[in-house]
Length: 113
Length: 116
Image 1 (cartoon, helix red, strand yellow):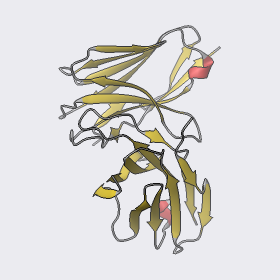
Image 2 (image 1 turned 90 degrees about the vertical axis):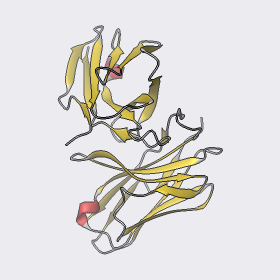
Image 3 (image 1 turned 45 degrees about the vertical axis):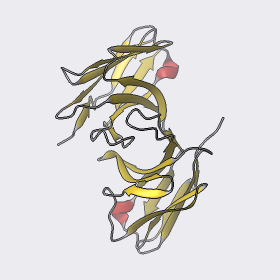
Image 4 (image 1 turned 120 degrees about the horizontal axis):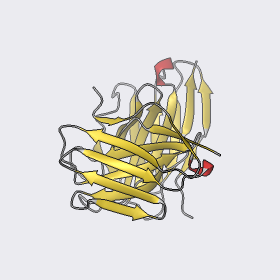
């Protein structure tokens, strides 16, 4: 069974709206969680890291929340643009062994003009 | 902008042939990772090096795969003999390992491998 779950269905939204992507995990207590963006034919690119003692982190139009009780992270893109269209991956160190990431399956976001 | 460089970008070869993929990590990074990405399995960790020493290769089929770091500027992933099920995109990533709260990983653009 998948250890880290992201919605495998594509998320289609209209330009200007807020996109919200979900990352759920079970049976782990990660010290931190990371979000990456992947464009077709390219490697993942790091976006944000949030630690277990942080509830929320922001970077420009991006916001990440981390609820260790619910075992869930939400990734928000406000005022979305067509250029935000990509696959977004969450990743966490399930063993807290130091830097060994396990990735979710990713959610593809399509922002329509 | 420092980047992780992977070669070749594409490789098509016949079953049974040896395949070698190369990676140049970002200068100064002390951790190197090899991942495999497929539609079915997503992104899977194959091997992990810290300061050139292999720390974990539990995700790698040992009978045909091998990963090495001959020096700090080169990491290699070899498959011998290759099989059609090895067809995937192989990514190398590097980062700064500083303990539990580690720095992000920087990925190359991958080697797209097709085994016929």
